[in-house]
Figure 1 (cartoon, rainbow, N blue to C red):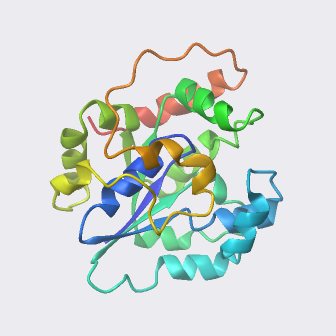
Figure 2 (cartoon, rainbow, N blue to C red; figure 1 turned 90 degrees about the vertical axis):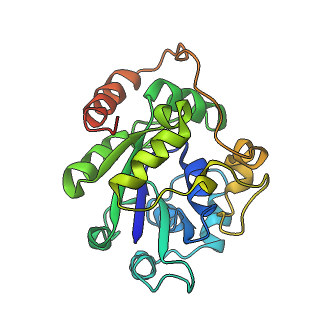
Length: 230
């Protein structure tokens, strides 16, 4: 099974990758199109030059790799993807051969968390319109990060049942520190996950933010949340 997990940044996506990576039967890949996205768009992201230098930037080569044989001994492949990486020139047909899952998070939390790492942002930087467009195009399963944090065992069991994958309690924990599969950007973005050994507890009250991005992002979030697993 090939699982393509789609989410914007600051959305529990790395913890979910580590969760699936804790399974003995699952290989993982970390944002394989990130280098291509930066190369094609020239976006001024933290560590952009290092990312382009260290990772494949040809989107056709990356797409082929997403469908390449899964490493021996691991019948399943989990790929962490970001919808906003799917810019013009990046193939999408490969995703039709995957089980597609869309991980969502309330935009007030995303904006607050992303803003702590990168002060300026657009709605496209945090991927909300691209995720809705991708969901409309390819469909898939929707799961809310808040529900996972509130009850990881129940929601991961629910997700696994939905995609016809046996649930493995090993998904609830992982060793502290990074993984060999991490992209080079991990040292900028993954600090909290590297200090963790499992999912954090339920989230507290929504942060109070004053952002012009919030109304449109909230509308998109609610449209996706209407399809989420309960």
